Length: 353
Image 1 (cartoon, helix red, strand yellow):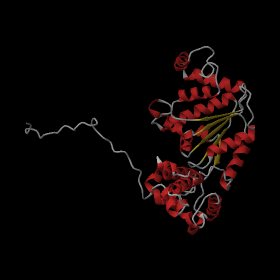
Image 2 (cartoon, one colour):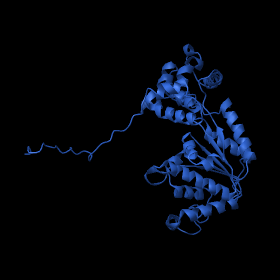
Image 3 (cartoon, one colour):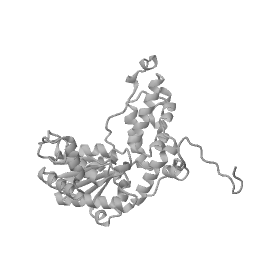
Image 4 (cartoon, helix red, strand yellow):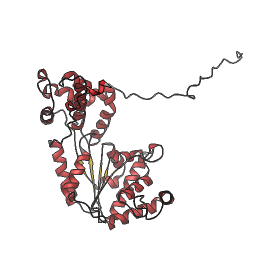
């Protein structure tokens, strides 16, 4: 394994540090003001493109609002759950969501962490038999008893997989909002742009939420100026070849490959750093180009941003149009018949052997 022994991983920079750039600071300040002044039962929605820094902002808000001390076992003022699709066939399940919440807060009956003498099998069967109504009531009472102030749901765009009907996701959002109102907590919903579509079908919820938009940097003079400043911060932590000079000289390709999303820029530069380490060289333009995703790989992300910004009333910028209007996502071809079996040959009528 000499090939692995010769790799110098100290040359790799994952750029895992926070850059307090303009859009992130503005969204953080806006969310902080809303969360510290909102009345219990109100809803705050934090949204933006993928890899914009929403999840890290939630942790910053938790530390700023509640501090980060060792929490009292009986109190959880800030409850944060990352939603996932753990229902059947990778769909969102409202009951599974309720069980995840009860597991997170270590409910004495519906959590496996506090077995109290019951076997895991017995507890899982009891949770399986419990109805959604019973679980929802248990969650509301628990949030009240733990003096919860903020109920925060991250990756909330996964709710859209609640069913094929677009109203299914809207119904889930309404149900969660009603639970938050009963528990007398501030509900914070955080996710990418599809979360807006789930909420938008519920006029009741849409008219009662406060929006915080963590936006990407668009193709305008002010935004590009800030984008280049961010590249300078990243470039100061990278070992670039002298002919490249600085990342300003490849700002255009970095912007096209990231659509102005800072997390995507970091990912591109991280991969460039890996390629440079494999060749035992400093980072050059070729490494950065190899770190880019192809237009076909970017089309899904571009369409998601396109739909989200249009829903917010913003016109798509030229970079998005170049991808969305000229590329189509690669769809998986439908295969009929059983695998590894020849499709039976059909003969014309009257000409069978």
